[in-house]
Length: 241
Image (cartoon, rainbow, N blue to C red):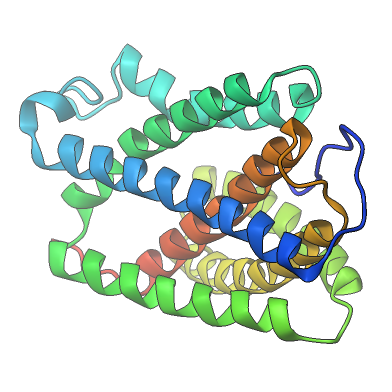
């Protein structure tokens, strides 16, 4: 589940425009690090039969104990980061964030078994392009996206519920509709989160542990936007082997 609330920890002060750029540079540095870790582990487990067998049984294809842990642990870590951020130190929060990105990468290794490798690469760059455009739009727009964000959150809850229902129904039509709505929702959330983080950079006291925590939580939000956008686009345009 998406976590879009920033921790209200530490004292914040109004600073110059450079503080916004400094804060956002930290956000994107953390996000890029997480994506590299996730991508490397997804590739490693997805292209190595022995490693992948640690996650799924070669005989039945069902998840192993480790596979179940890798599947559900990232969700627990997201809630842990969101709920315990004020009690964690910046170092511990960073460690949890890195662990989260590693487990998420391992859980994404299945895409290399389901989809054609070339299409995975194409969809990744497509996702990066859409994400980049919407991030720039969110940063530069003068329109207040707060109301849009509220609508998108409702839509996010809707596709989560619909996805759970479709797990039992197995409808390809519903899966297609969910994927289209997912692309719209996570595209919008990228712009919304970018604007929110820009505003946060205006008031954060740079160089403090509170600023580090806020940057990490901001990186988590953008990371989730990108990963979910990538997965939704992959479901629409990915070629299956």
